[in-house]
Image (tube, rainbow over all chains, first blue to last red; front, side):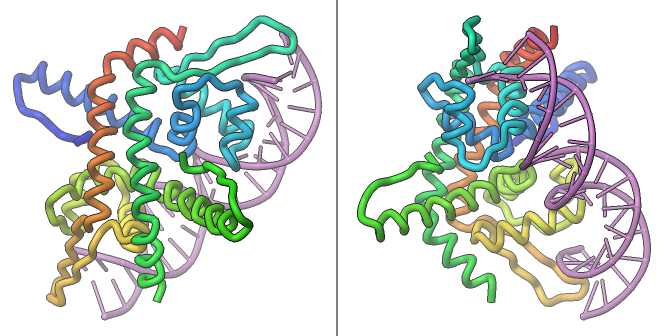
Length: 127
Length: 127
DNA sequence: CCGGATCCTTATCGATACTG
DNA sequence: CAGTATCGATAAGGATCCGG
């Protein structure tokens, strides 16, 4: 539970609520579709910017850079710039990134497993 | 992989790309912080609207109803209206909802496990 | 090829007020 | 208590241009 509160000494409590707000901040960062799709797409490979752009259907240049910067800042992806011309920039998952990807895989599996359930639930609801 | 493309007969291909776009749609629905926090908060319990509102820090009335409708439509939460006055509405996870919650738990665990990593990565990046 | 900066168009969100 | 509807403020997102 991300928002869980704790009891304890004033100092502990302060530290824990600070940790909680940080946890919430991180959660808000990564719990959006583009970030998760990027994590999922990079996978075990190493991909260039344009490759990512082509693999993730519908993502704009801006969203991709924006989310890549955010993921890089949080230490989930590694950005490797080759000083060539034209430039070559490669993105890889770090160890924390790969760990997160394991759970994102779970979400993707879930989506496919319950596709039928969801489709019928929608039909039922829309009446 | 959510966006994976397949080969096959024209019919199969059409069905699979349709399934893929549906998968992507579902993924876009649930991959947002409020939806995931709701899934996480309902958990194994049954909660009323206001209880949810109080437990999920920072969520507005509007976001809560909006996401609950969406989750209900996709068959992830069950909405039980008691015909009393004042009304009493209780939300519970369905079986698909509980299955998804398992993976969301994984994301929350991940967040707490890598809190330190992320905090130092941020400091490093911000310089 | 990559990414920043700009402008401009949407969509999101919160606050408020109102019904059963 | 739970939910819908409306309305501004504001943030997100897309398109484009330019510089490294």
